[in-house]
Image (cartoon, rainbow, N blue to C red):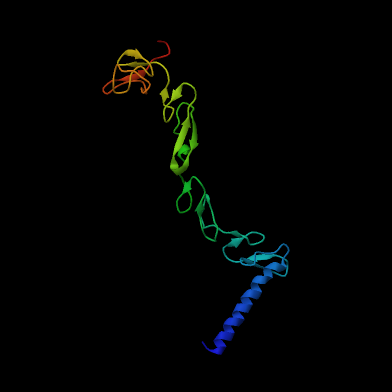
Length: 173
């Protein structure tokens, strides 16, 4: 590198440093990395930055439910996915809980239903109480699933075993 090239680089560096210090002349001061102050005490932002102090990055065009840390990014908020954060991945959006159950979004697209009294199951789809198994009246813990006639605390569902039909008893029976 010649002496002229070195001098030119130093001058360019000094100009750049002098330009970035202009941010401190506005009141309140512009972010010196992202903008500069003009004579009318207004911050002028570099491309990719916005706001009265040039301290807010501009998200990628079309970014719907995202934010940025650096210009032109689209970092999705919780529950959103895709390049533009426009895909809803919250499990409760599809209202999976039946019978007025309350859905709670968990992490990784999972959910949990809080069932109202009288209902149970992952989606509150099971009605608690008596049921009819192959035409015979039974109840929720009357027999272990898959083992007709056996009862116990491990029983679940309506108690219908393999090949059996189950249906809830009508409230009139």
